Length: 195
Image (tube, rainbow, N blue to C red; front, side, top):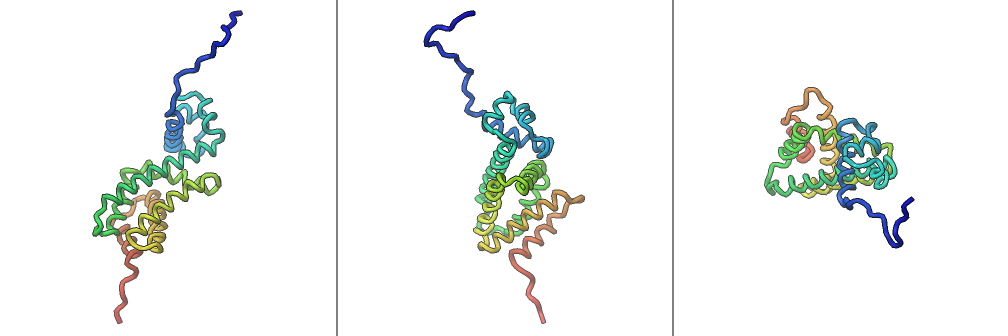
């Protein structure tokens, strides 16, 4: 048996400061490919290209993995929403802009939309996820309210989320004009009655 010299320490491999973030992104990828039920420490480790022990070191439970995935998805969404909102001219037709935003989520970004809703709905059964899902809701209310008023912002946020869910499931998907009409009614109210 070989004895180590006094004072010698065992060296570890190079530190990987990005590992936790890679695991979080991999958890989103696993949800995209397999749904919530497909998320295991093993599946996420494989997707991240890290040893199984890394996922359990950084995220002790499956709820921890799902929570970080939901936070990551919500942060990505909020960032994209901020960019969208800042690029929107102040005098933009807001109902038309919201309809266009929904169409982007259900067409070009369909996969991401499904992942985000999988994670969002998981919060119904996993209280630890509710804070992250609430962050997305609050961001929507704030953005939409800044273009209208706080109450209308809340109404638009609920309509937006509901339309995304319905449109993502619908076959065929609703037309952009139909979605715009719904947003316009929420923003402007019903047409004035003529006697």
